[in-house]
Image 1 (cartoon, one colour):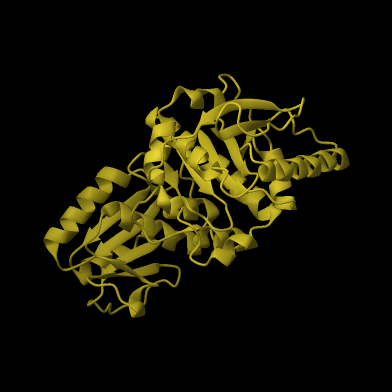
Image 2 (cartoon, rainbow, N blue to C red):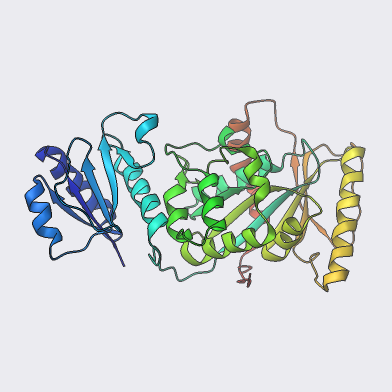
Length: 359
């Protein structure tokens, strides 16, 4: 199923270039019809249906359109007045495509965007304390996988997301739009997910953090389940890397169940060891209450490790995946890149260990 769209603009050169580029890149997703005169569009609409109409902001149609058609004005300059129903005319076609998807998702459902034939593998990195380096290692693994040509989504679910210190890309949508879609029964989640996703120049896919940090705390356990199900069903990611603060709540405890593998990033400080002890105790109690076994998928990663310094947490049921040495002081992007290029990260992905989990 494709989105049926039309563009009306008096600039013949622009319309021709728009039609050609959109067809070249997204012909499998959008069926586009191009017009430079109002009469031609009106004649076309008498016997054809569309869902999206992109129209030059200066054109006033002399007919009343079907109320189901979403009209997006092509504007040359963005302003507060026209942001909700307009698209900046001169920008990358990939960003225009995202905005078409976003508009479609608010009014229509049922657009199947991907037909994958593989399972999605979820790896969660959970923090055992501030400054443990969880985000650094999670980002490094995502970068490592992307470098190998593996399509990877990095999902920052921290209360105060730090993803933009590592991954950046153009686009105006964020996790705010995703959360709104998840909580609404009127918005097509699959289409909204694709409209908001961004691609870092490294090849890692990601979502910008919520515009309002408090929105992240509105994600319930049911919301998380719905989000991951949608990503697994409609996304074509081989790996989803999740970065989250561990809290003793239903969301984090359910994420232990949903993940194929979980890494707690820790260091050897006494404070961190005490926090880790409390976390493991809470997981153990929850396991008994719900008759679930999590220890077979939990691993420890010792970060900033210096042999002989500090103490190591002892747990016979949980393995230490690897020891990451302390890297020289540098900016966060450089550290992530350096770690991503080490062979140590290969220990975090076990071959043949991609069993599909039911969420």
